[in-house]
Image 1: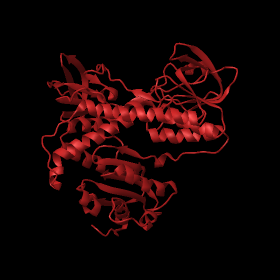
Image 2: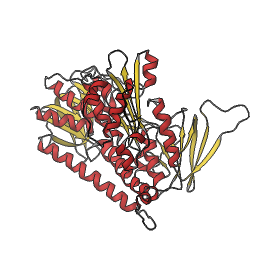
Image 3: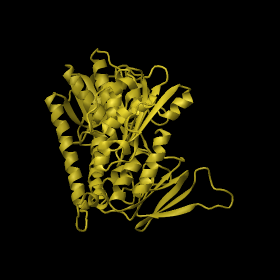
Image 4: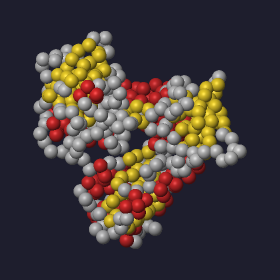
Length: 477
C-alpha cells in the first residue's frame, strides 16, 4: 500500500472494495488509468465475499452433504453409522474459503498496479477524498474521477434489535457456534431461505415469518408456489401474511410477537413464538451514510439510493456510482458488470448493460433461477406471450441423479418468438439459466435455443424441451 498524495491526482479513485469496486478498479487500471481503491473494512470483497454470497454458499454446500447423508445415501446402497456434525470444523473450512479469496483479490490489485488504501473515505470536495486510515492516520487523495461502490447494509426492523448473539443479521447467522433448536426467520426472501435451509439441514426447527402472502416477491408465481411446497417438504414452516411486532431476548430465548399483516381482528390477540435465535432478513439498504455526499451536492432518496444516469454519473461532476448504492437488484454480478462498464465509460469507451438479462438465483436445494420477465409481469403489461414447461422428472440425467424436483419454464413473445424470460426450479438451476441468458443477450428466440444441439444425458436438455414445449414439440412429455 503506497502513501496517497493530494498533489499527484489519480485518474480514478474507487470507494469500496466489494465486487463492483474492485472490478471497476482493475478494469480501469487495465485501460491505462492511474487507479486507487479505498476500503475501510480491513478486507476486500465486500459483503458478498466476507459475510454474504461466499460463506453462505460454503455452508449450503456442507449442509447439503449432511442432508444427503441422512436422506438419500441409503437409496444408493451407501450406509453410514451415526452421522455427526463438527460445526466448529465446518465454520473453520468456511473461513478458509473466504480468507483465500480475499487475499487473492489483494494480489489482483497489486498485479494490475492498483493502489490499495485501507481506510474510511469521505468526499471532501469535487475531486478530493479524505481518508481516515485504519492505522490512525488521516490523508487526502485527489482524483479526476471518483466511483462510489460502497455496497449495502442490513435493513433494520423497528423493535427488533440485532445483537448478533440471539437476534441476528445474516452476518451472525453465518457464524453461530451451535445449531439452534428453533430458529425464527423474519423475511422469506433469498437470504432468509438460504440460511433457513442451512440450519434446517443441520438440525434446527425453522419458522419463517413473512409479511406478504407469498415467498420470494418478484419470483414467477407458479415457480414460487412449487418452491414453497418443496421447502415445506424439507421441514421449513411458513407463516405467511404475518408481521413481527417485536422480538425481545429473555434469558437464553427470544420472544417473538407476531400478528396478521392486516392487523388483528376484533378481540384477537397477537401470538408469541419462542426461539433460540431470530434472523432478521427483510432486505438490505444502500450504505451511503457518512460518505459526505452533501458536501458535493449529491442527494439520495429516503432509502439512501444515489440517482445516476445511463452512464452511472451522479449529479456531481466526475463522481460516479455503481452496485447496491444505485437502483436495481442488489446482486454481486450486477455490480461487477457495472464496474466494468463505468471504467470503460471513464476511459472514453462506450458501454451499456441490459438489465433484462441479469439472472437471479436462490442457492437452496433444489436451486431456483430466473431471468427476464415473470409470467405475471407479462400479463400485467398486456404482452402477448407463449409458454413452455418441462418437468425434471422427465429428464433422464435428473432421474439418474435422483434430482427430479422442479421444472423449467420458458416465456416467449407470441409473434416474434423472442425469449422474454425463463424460470428454473431444480438441480443446478443457477448454472442452467445461463444458456437462456446467452440467447436473450443477442435477442434470440426459443427456436434459436432449440437449434443448439444439447448433449445427452444432461440437465440442459430440460431447458431445450421447455422451449420445444412452447409449440408442442417436446419429445419426452
